[in-house]
Length: 261
Image (tube, rainbow, N blue to C red; front, side, top):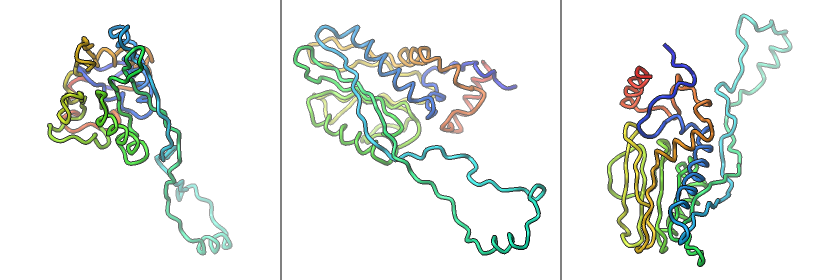
């Protein structure tokens, strides 16, 4: 029996339907703004969470239909004249290709700054699909990532996307999602929260200066709030398979969730 369109599944952690490329930009924006608001409620007046953005052009495959070539069936195709048959016979047959189109990409991130001086204490990044596929987005992000790791700023990197190539790390177990907390005084070592679809989202401390009280980041609460604010459940058909597809193990688990819904 098909699941009603708006019946939400009870995911303990990440909702894989939010990874859909048509939905993720709203999720990303909501997470960034809600995180900035939640942090400012805890870290002011000594610090301030500022939402920043970077803009660049990247090559995207835009508007590719599922069926690129229309063919008339034998039952509906009209009888061709001799002239048409001759003309058709002399035409070369092309192959179908896709042309990447440059598109402007806007990615938001958070900088925790010291009030008064403007010193950047911590950078919080939530990865987008462009950061995890070959192209300008990944190139620019990796360069920025390295600059942060070479600086006196902490880095918090949140990856809630199963598709694409994960950011480079040495060691650690395979996982669908991860959060990296790189503290300046511990580099090159970093804290890694690795988790899968069936696991709860991590709650972790955001690094600040040594003498500061570190605020807790509750990803589940922030994600749920972002979904509620944008009414994303009304845009998701939970009867359909999520994009990208699940692993066999997660698909079996998903069928179990559907029975409980």
